Image 1 (cartoon, rainbow over the protein chains, first blue to last red):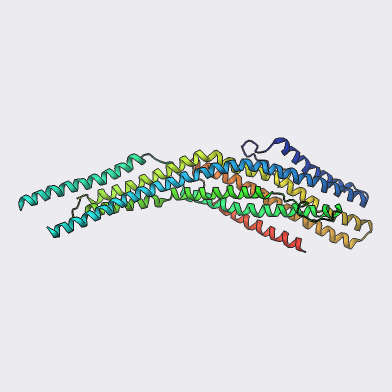
Image 2 (cartoon, rainbow over the protein chains, first blue to last red; image 1 turned 90 degrees about the horizontal axis):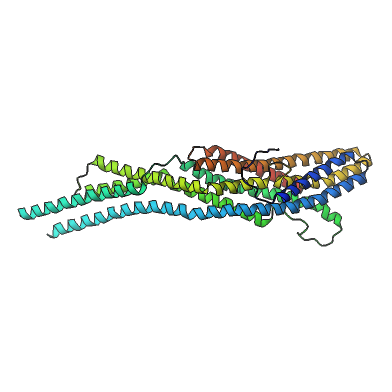
Length: 122
Length: 308
């Protein structure tokens, strides 16, 4: 499943490392395809050994790439984490408005009770 | 007595005026503090964004586990043939280092919380609860020992106005936060998509594809030996195993491609929300959840195949 739609953001990893990873992956594909041309079992063994060696490098470079790309992801995550308290504060602000209005209502109820009591005393 | 009554009447009028001023001031305070019109921002979409991030977190975990499984399996043959006698986990590194997986989980966790909180901020209940609070204040002002004499229609209008202002202000605030963070959220999600890989020859997709090829080496060697010996029964059995492995490889690569698409779709949904335009996240969420089931099924299938 190939698709080439672009993400629209600058690369998060070293382009040379990314290119090297892709080249190694392509080399695995090429080596695998060359098994078609093998004439002997020994040749197949030799090619699969080569594939295993190249694949080990694919994994190593792939892990480095992921680590670099994850640094960019972590920077974005830190910005999102920073925004969370702002959203919480905004929610609290509106809660506070309602609490204030509720407080005034309660205060007025108490005042009314005091007035009622004052009336009976007077 | 009359003086006393007159005095009380003046006091009552003053209280009534005070109460009117209280309600008007409260409404004015809300109006001046919260004035302005917000562009459309959907609470459901923002909550959906948070939920989608949570589902993607699970989908990512399952995909990473699958990638690690095949990457390690690909090293088994190489390790056994190396002649090494000491068995540790070092020769079997995962495709995704644990700290990378943890950072992704954390990032998607932040996105989930962020989306759900924005959903709460823009919830229509923000306005409804405020309307109710002002309504109660109006009831108290009109009732009790001294009524403010505010007509029910006016009180209801003020209550509704206060609720609408709070709702609009909350949405405007959410839109502001959405816009300011659009580059970060978009950058984060597109970096994840890029790390997964644009094609099967790049990124994690490339690593997984190569690992599958390497892991079939054992079958290719076994086939070569069987073909050399003209052992057709073995040849057929090996070919079937090989084709089965190719199918699982393609299914896993398709899952990774779908994961990449989900990251990009979520980034687009976020940007649309930040732009104030409506884009239903519900459909996207359905698709992402459907993919999660598919990925889980495939992971189970690969695990079962590996156990045979």
